[in-house]
Amino acid sequence: MTLYNVVVVGATGLVGRKIRDILEERNFPVDRLVPVASRKSVGLDILFKGLHVKVAPLDENAFVHADIAFFATKNDISREWVPRAAQHCRIVIDNSSAFRQERGIPLVIPEINPRTIFTSRSRIVANPNCSTIQMLLPLKPLDDAYRIRRIVVATYQAVSGAGQRGVLQLEHETAGKSVPEHNRVFRHPIAGNVLPEVGVLYSDGFSSEEYKMVDETRKILGRCSIKVAPTCVRVPVMNVHSEAVTVEFERPFDMRTVQRILQEAPGVVLANGENGSGYPHALEVDGRDEVFVGRLRRDESVSNGLSMWIVMDNLRKGAATNAVQIAEAWVKGPSAFKVETP
Ligand SMILES: NC(=O)c1ccc[n+]([C@@H]2O[C@H](COP(=O)([O-])OP(=O)(O)OC[C@H]3O[C@@H](n4cnc5c(N)ncnc54)[C@H](OP(=O)(O)O)[C@@H]3O)[C@@H](O)[C@H]2O)c1
Image 1 (cartoon, rainbow, N blue to C red):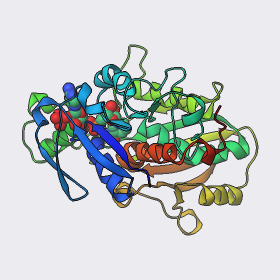
Image 2 (cartoon, rainbow, N blue to C red):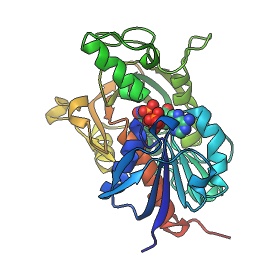
Image 3 (cartoon, protein in one colour):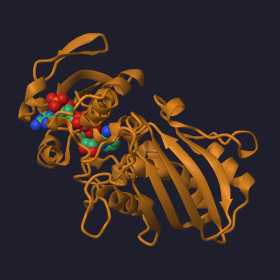
């Protein structure tokens, strides 16, 4: 079996730690792991597959003998270092949004568009936004069957989606402690609160997270005509995002077939309960890799409307699991996806 030298940049953060865990859990063929983080973490000891490994600084040396690099860092670091890493590595998988809309760089959900890893010929692969992965995994097979015209979505996003500082702010506020300024990531209190602001709020009233959901949906489904109306909301939940989604199809559907399609969809669990009485919730989905769907019901206000409740662990399938699955697909190679190589 071929083994790979792997670099994880941002290895001490929420997503980077999960990438390390998931590489181990899924027994990804790692020869050597190089964890990279900011200066303050350099030299820290981390455990990977029972071995102690020291956190390395972010410099060119980290990538020299690497095959695969995962980036779990903010946009500015990815923007500078992902192309430099790609000069050394065979594939670089980036969790930030720095390259997601760049032409020629694939934006990949392995259950949906794995072939683009090989057809694009880019060494950089972008991991989509968590809320978009969550929404599209169940919607893609329904799109294939009934063709989506419009999606209206409200997200209920956990604080872990904002990284370690998001978790710390909720922990401090819940414990009644004052939040150190350098750990404040939400501009209003989040404990006991609901904030309709995820990412940056622009002067047109939209947030950066809402734009990501629109643009990334269109890129992944390959259709600019799809209409998406998102409202992204931060809630005082530690981990796991939820979404209320209403979708309007071009073609009529019947509920039994919709249920069957979702039961058969890879990576999706239909948790609709007996006669639609059940639903998935954040606490039970924490730590799971699948995307859970419940509260399926017809939206009678339009011709072919369907409403549902979708729940996903944002750190796992929304980030780390999806990234490791991209690496697994790359390891399988183009022939596994019927992509011809020149
Ligand atoms: N959280 C989610 O649910 C989620 C989902 C999808 C995508 N993403 C994206 O994934 C990326 C990482 O998010 P996160 O939630 O893991 O953030 P995080 O918890 O804040 O972790 C950030 C990581 O970046 C490292 N870092 C900071 N400055 C650095 C520098 N100058 N050089 C090298 N490493 C540096 C940090 O190291 P130190 O520990 O040393 O500071 C830490 O390991 C972001 O782009 C985010 O938008 C996150």
